[in-house]
Length: 564
View 1 (cartoon, rainbow, N blue to C red):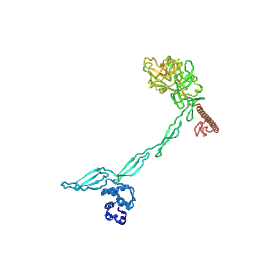
View 2: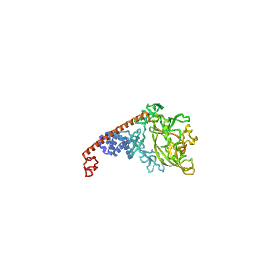
View 3: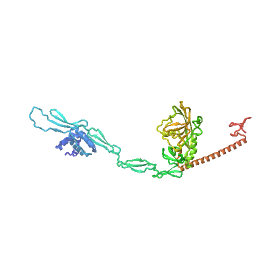
View 4: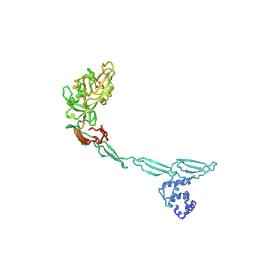
């Protein structure tokens, strides 16, 4: 084995000349002529200076040197790697990674000598040369004869000789990457390593949801420690049934223990409840009045009786069928039904404590101009609104606008859904016709009906009513009543608190008003005293200036005439 380190130390001039190095090695190691030639070729290619100036040789550089020598000189890869190790040991340079044997190195083979029979036909004697593939060209075996004939076979595909030079590991959310570099041509190739994804544990509750507040729970990734949070929706109250306590209704939440108080237990639109009492049979016995919740606004609720409670004329002194001109003067504001609802009915149907929660509301009233194009019994069409006004009522009837809103039916007779008529009570049924078609109930809006053919003998005027599936006019003396009213759902404690605040504000206003009047009185007295003083001095009573003029005295400052 060649000890190149000893040779270099003894003959340092050999590093300057590859031929001299080769001759010295031939003399010292006559049995290692192959290695001596390869070592000299490495020196001649300038690779020795690179090795000498390096602290260590990485895999990429080592394979690049091997490829360069193999391509240029055609030596076998195993011999090249051995010689590179000899040069590295001579200079004490470390090779970082053990060399990797190269495949498909160019090796010259001589065909075995065969006995030839005497013949006039030329027999090819081939020399096989294995040409390894490059990065872009295919590899093959070349068979060459001394006569000049040659052929190729055993082709192998072109391929890069990649080595891994950089690697980044994937994380839960970020992809990793491997970078490979060809030791022959230097081209790089990147390979993506998909992210592993989180591995979350179970959800763990951190804050329990309450009746009115949300809670949350957390889970954690066992790889990277990332935490995720999600909301647990509030559960809502679980109230006990309503119970009567004094003037209010009370219920408690089973979960948080809070207490809810209302003057009347209303929870949602469409709810049916009992409020007040009124005779609803021919026997005259008072029964609880059932109401349907039509609308809720904050702590106020609109109730509509779900039965026809009575039958009354719009005005008992006026009959539209007998005196049309007098009937024209009747409006909701001066009707008998309105007066009866807000006095007789209000006092008869509700106790004093119940009347405290009935609100006085401003209701809007319209007068419609209708025109009848077809014989009597058909639905009229709305042409216009000829009059509008407001009234303040405790109890009232619904309007056309409210019927359209709550029941989705139009005044022209086109209904989106058939309205379910309220049941006619025995008491009301005894005051009118018993046919279901006549179970009409009056509205607070009125109408003028203009006839357009000979079937209608004259114009008519009267309140609007609701039939089973449309709105229409009806010139009758008796109308069924479905009262409506607004109630305050605020508890008596809250109402007392609001009333105390209002009284406190009123007292503060009265005190401020008294101070204002007192100050005004003081200023007036001060003004009169100043005016008296100026009169006594004979100067202007307004500004104190001097008067000028022979016959008409005027102030020289403000120009006011002397009035004393």
